[in-house]
Image (cartoon, rainbow, N blue to C red; front, top):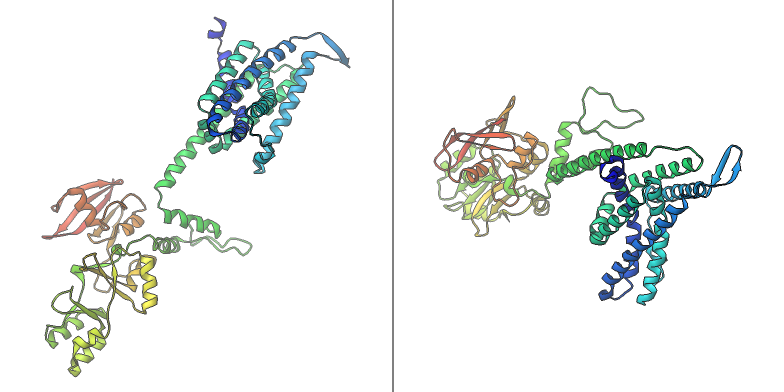
Length: 507
């Protein structure tokens, strides 16, 4: 009953099982290297035989070493210190663990790894098994010495070795992947070996260290490592939810020596270093990096807001349309926006109307740049440069005009909105509330609210109105609201066909 009621024995058993598993990883790696030299149908058999032989060898060596440490008759003395076979074995084993753990830590901290090319290649099943047996003997030493240094009960040692070997036999691939993905776990276990090695050497010189102290230190270290792994996993999850462009922006800021946030009153850093990016500069970097993945549909002026000229109108109506508009370029169409003739400058159109020229011929002489609405903002920017124009007409797969994008729109996506004199900004903030237009792009809104999750790559909508229509399933009424990403979106104004204004409140 002592085994079931002594918490120190249970602590030693659990800790020893973990150490035996980690110490057996190298054995697994080299067995995997050797069995690859065999035909595929023999590999599983060789792996099972190799691990079984490793278990038997560990149990045999464990029995021998456990018997040797009972030899306490003094052999010789040095001053006031007397040494027996037990002391010599403990000191030798402790020095072995110190040397092995130090070399392993050096390899991992220096970024080195075991070289598989040093292992001879054999095709014979028997020779491979012999090699595995020799490797088992080498890799069993640290395992046996660790067991002797951890606990004093032979039964506990054997149970730990058997359980560890069974776990490695069943989940060798998973364990190897876990250890490779969490190198700090290996470093922690190697530090345990250093502590056990010091304990063995001290005990060999007659200084007994209670095992409870070792268990407490190891348990505390394992708890801290568990917290570190939890923090790392949560950090990775948080990074996955951060847009790629934002992560890239932060990386560039760090590489350039800047800080994520910068106070304008803060002095320039010493040794000639430039200060970090301020908020506006960071927004510009984010805007530039987003061009490659941002659809032009998030930047376009929609079809129902395009100001265009119809050649079927009389000259006075065309002149009035041009004079009342602040635009310099006008799509010229024949009765319908889909019957596009070209894009003409306002001054050229006014001059042609004054002189009575054929405005249809003028429009056809200046054809529009027509691009699909699925194009990215970066590709459109390249198209502007190649075609030496700054206005593009967007069409869908059926050839119907969906909107237009200007070079001014692309500039706004980088540096922020430039509203006209008679135009209200798309996003107006008042404390923890925002009033936005229904046509506001979700990309811009995410950036303004400093959140993610509004833009869904699997959905076709790109504006606030599109998101709300998808949420409600139909055109909502004024006062209807929905909650998304910690904010409440309330419809303020609608007309017969679209959502005009939305109020956003932080929950």
